[in-house]
Image 1 (cartoon, helix red, strand yellow):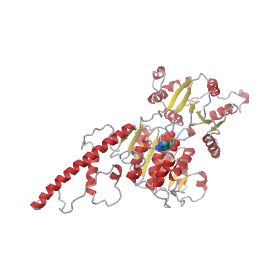
Image 2 (tube, rainbow, N blue to C red):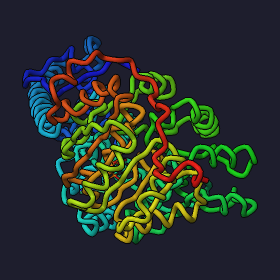
Image 3 (tube, rainbow, N blue to C red):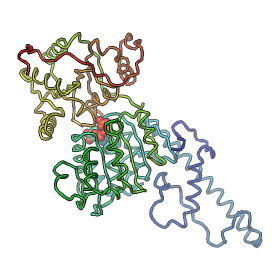
Image 4 (cartoon, rainbow, N blue to C red):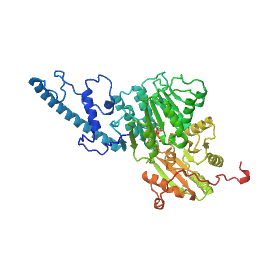
Length: 524
Ligand SMILES: Nc1ncnc2c1ncn2[C@@H]1O[C@H](COP(=O)(O)OP(=O)(O)OP(=O)(O)O)[C@@H](O)[C@H]1O
């Protein structure tokens, strides 16, 4: 990728060298004004329109330095025209500078950090979707109906980037509206439903997230007949799905690769590919599947984008190998937790101590909905068995459950039928449960990224939330990394934790004593 340019702290002086790209874009625009009759060029779509210049048709266009055959009259006219051109050029430069300054202020206000060439102006409001990009009324209507008054910071910047036909990798806090940031431009670019094969693909790491994304996309597309399909097991079994009309296909990588292998799908016409929770998708277990999908999406003009709340350097490096002239958008600090979450660390001496502390805190004040994370499905089952007989509406979700059991667990939690949901990391990413009051890390998370995603199930869409992380002696060496995340998002951390040595952290999933309080001979 080419070296990034950030306008964030730029002044108002127009530096031709620094803004060579913008300057040349401006020049190109002037030169092509008479040629472009309708429709916006990519550059025009990106920057706000610079005042259009009407060229005079009376004088033959001089070729610079070769005007020796001109009459004195025409050279006088030429000088006059030159003056006019100069003054128009300086006006346009001023306007461009003002725009750059406005963009910088807006980005600064919303903590939008960018790098890349000719990054389009961020959105000031949703109505710019129609004034700048000709957005259809159904979409604006749906945004209003969903109660979205203002674009979130990631939406302000990523939507114009994608609408300008640029590839994008984006990192923004959990619960900050990344889904809309990629679905909205996708719908706008696709324009109408078509039966010409699959035109867009969204990959999500889990079935639950894929189902949620499909549902949210349909809400945004309401009133417009798009074919938005979730690639389910049933759909995959139902014979030839290659003929199925499908504008947007949403899937997990495993299922999609399986469809590609069985030659059930043709992805050669895909125009847009989104990798949601991209760092998860690039993890060892999934990267081969992603590779297969990326290869199958062979359309040379495909626009790819990567979104996540955590974007480690290795993902950026991988992304650079597949993306062209991409724009990088970071909201706030990279790899940080949402500032809306009050984070706490609690020490427990043993597994028994953990359970006791949990029961006590539930007895004192239970403020559902609560999401409780443990490190494995075995431990999820054990904790469920312990709490199921307490006077709490508790449920559990993990990978050993059938798809319908998993769906029911999510639906009941969403509907408020379940107060406390015990979960493994299977729902740690992307899941949008409205108004979770508290996330409890019953077992310490196995990485800082897992911590950020787990606690990010609360404190979403502008609401506040709470996160409690229980740690034992085994977890102490890893405390510092979590404490760093906490401190970076403004939470207080005991000084002794900040004084702990920094550890290079791979995966921390220690062997823990059983949660079960049943005597050994009564355990299954
Ligand atoms: N412009 C907006 N104004 C208000 N709410 C919004 C806006 N855009 C999205 N939301 C809401 O914010 C919530 C979080 O959005 P979303 O699930 O896309 O977050 P995310 O950034 O993808 O989070 P995660 O990193 O956890 O996947 C959703 O309930 C969504 O409906």
